[in-house]
Image (cartoon, rainbow, N blue to C red; front, side, top):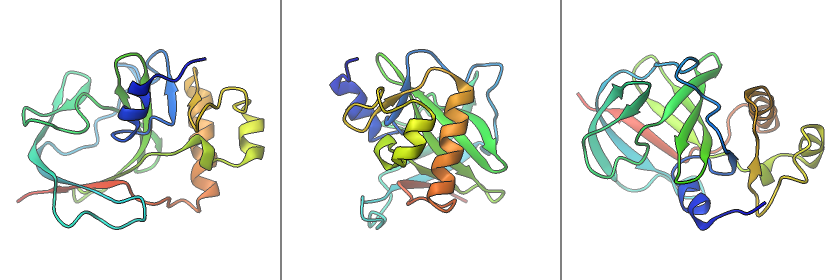
Length: 174
């Protein structure tokens, strides 16, 4: 198994620590909880501190079966969401060769937060349960079925008391 540099680069944008060769959030299974409109995006430092100001501003809208923006440098262009638990979604973004997965919280007031889970932050017991120890390379795990991804991410959330650190937030702009 090879882990191209593109996976590592894209991981900074959306959960590249879990990836698949094929889409696990398909057009048929995609959900659309995000309120279309203007947003700002503020990423967080690895230590949990938010950047001192937003790094992106623009309109987010549904484009077919994904979310997109015409504003330049939208960090999550063409992301699809699928509900994992009430209010918590799996975000899927395509890189050049793979599909990458992250966790996304969508709140009724329009606020959106996300976390890029790391396979290396999953317990050894969980990686063994889901047979990921052989798939893990440099903290990245390949998962090829929705059922496994769903179970892994629910376990990941449970191991992080339901609230892992934030990696970024989208705030609606009035």
